[in-house]
Amino acid sequence: MSKDVCAATKSKWAHLQCEQYNSSAPGDEYFGRMKMSYLGIDNTYKDGAISAGDYTTDPRLISKLDFATDALRRWASKYPHDPQLARAYFLGVMVLRKVYTQPEQDTAWEFIQTLVSQYSGTYFGRVMKTSLAKGFTEHLMATAQVCPTPLPIGVGVMPEVTPDVTPTPSPAPGHPSIVVIVPPCVPSKAASL
Image (cartoon, rainbow, N blue to C red; front, top):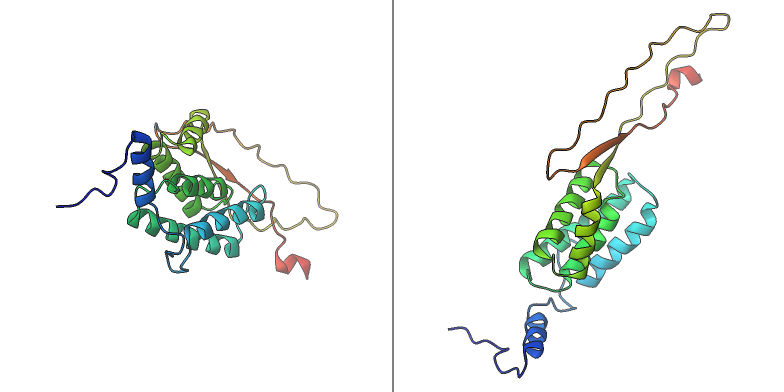
């Protein structure tokens, strides 16, 4: 028989506060491989959002974010009703949507779905639901291709085939649309010699 530690509260508000307090992770408990506190997770995501700028594919930043994501998942599995989880998921979305790699875009989409389904009553869940109503687009960075070999001097310009414009299909219901960004070509090492 489990004893309700919040049963002695005098009002509904006090009962709610007691339940939130008792379902929260202590500030000195650490999660994941890097042993991050919930404040460390939030700070890693905030710092990552600043470091990412408009977008990034920097593996060093991605590594730090992956450690924070691992810690967040372990925190959520141990304290599923912690009221601070919604904030951490929200901060995770804010930075992971700036990382243009498939795993991070998938994690951002997973966190969005978690906020909308499990934390829809929180401020962060409502903000994400409003943002999602406007649409979510996954951004991916394609691999840079080698530039074509320049024509020898005196040879005319070769006619190019005009590419056909292909419409982007609409995303399936419940899935984000995807934009692949193609970086400029990089010169081959043989051409620069």
